[in-house]
Every structure is written in C-alpha cells, then in structure tokens.
Amino acid sequence: MKKKTNSGEETLRSIRRNSAYQSSRMLSLFFAVVLVFSFISFAYLLSLEFPKSQRAIILLTGALLGGVSGVNIFHFLHAYYDQSDALIQVAKFQERSLRRRNDALSLVEKIREEVEEDNREEIANSQQELPNPDETEKKISSDLSEEPKSTS
Figure 1 (cartoon, rainbow, N blue to C red):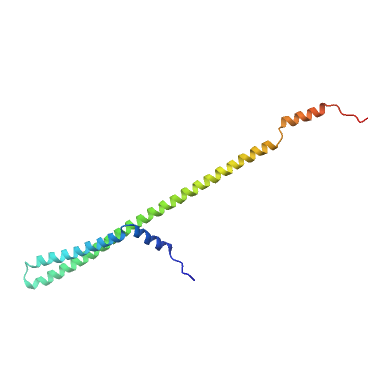
Figure 2 (figure 1 turned 90 degrees about the vertical axis):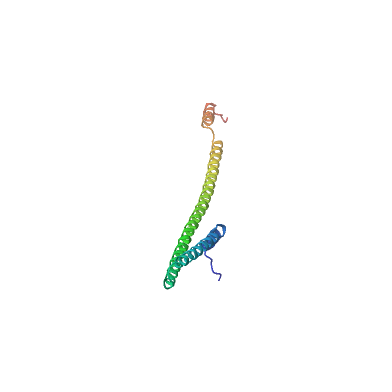
C-alpha cells in the first residue's frame, strides 16, 4: 500500500524552494562564523597587551563569548527567517483561498443567473399557454348570446 505523503511538507518545500530561504540561511551561518572569528581575533589582539599567564584565559573567554554570541545570533536569524517564511506561506495560502473563494462566488453567481433566466422562460411559457381571461370571457358570452340550435 502506497504511503500517503504529507501535502503540508510538500507545500513547505516548494515555498522554501521558491523563496530566498536557503540563501538567507547560508548568509546567517556565514555571519555567525564571521562574528565568532571576529570575537576570537579581538580577544587575541587584546591578549597581546597582557602577560603570558593571562593570555590563555583571555583567549578562552573571547572564544567562549564569540561562540555563544555566534550561536545566539545564528538561532535568532534562523527564527527570523522562519517567521518571514511563515508569513510568506500565510500570504500564499490566503491568496489561494481568496482566489478559490472568488472562483466559487463567480460560479454561484453564474448558476444563479442561469436559474433566474430559466425561471423567466418558464413564466413566459406558462403565460403563453394560459388563455387570456378576457378572451375566455368573450367566448363564453358570445356562446351564451347565440341562440340555441333546435333539432327539428
């Protein structure tokens, strides 16, 4: 039996494929790595002014601060891109639902017009089939005014 695929995941992949999702993730990774290396290089430059015994502590602190800040900014940017990706998805789904709604409304309006037109035609046909009450009254009165025929 064929396993049914999740259409939500397919839609998510297609939206991400059509947006700048992957390139923005790569850019955030690059920015986080640059931030980590800049912290480490700043710590190295700062440690040159201190004695040799404190250099290791300053470098370790700089690497730790750089790593933590790089990871934090990386996760923040990922959350930001996920949020923008979600907004893109919501906008596309809303556009699609509005398009479907408008299509459905136009279809209902078309059906309504056809039904009203059919009703008008039926009314017109039924009026043509019914005899005019004035004409039937005249026929009856003319039939009554005639003298009865004798059978002699």
